[in-house]
Image 1: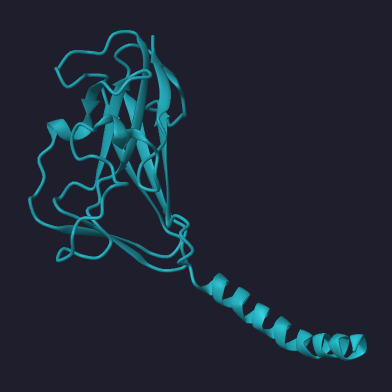
Image 2: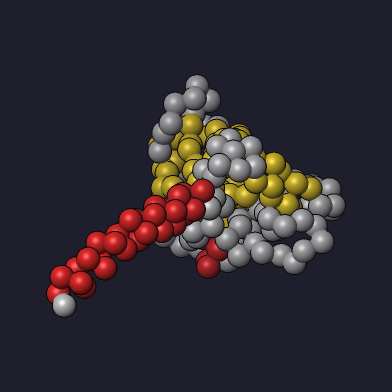
Length: 192
């Protein structure tokens, strides 16, 4: 009896191995496993292109948002205005917005799209003169900055918004400051 059971198991092993192998191939080809399609990072640089975390008062900061499509396929992101990204500076360890790039900008009020080829990286750069939304220079101190894409959805202009992980177009709420595939982490920097 044990011998018959063992022989059945041995006979089924090639079939089991074939099934497991096929499912692993499908998992590798099918990128719908819930992992993020994009990686979003932020760097702060001086005007010479040196990455820094400390800047002299009044010095221009070069803010660079980098977005990488980590998938094997072309990805299209839709935006409900001409704005595609935003940068926001807050007081250290708070949700108090002192400056957001979009506050001084005007954008077309029509849907736009941004296409990323497979494994493509796109960058968005803004020069900031340390002036807050109130028009005054920020005082010496510690601050945090983050940035991201202000996407509306990945389906097209005729589809409902799916932008919970996107960057706010204006002043973000505290809940919109957590990093996602479309928002960078909060980067600490000092003005001295």
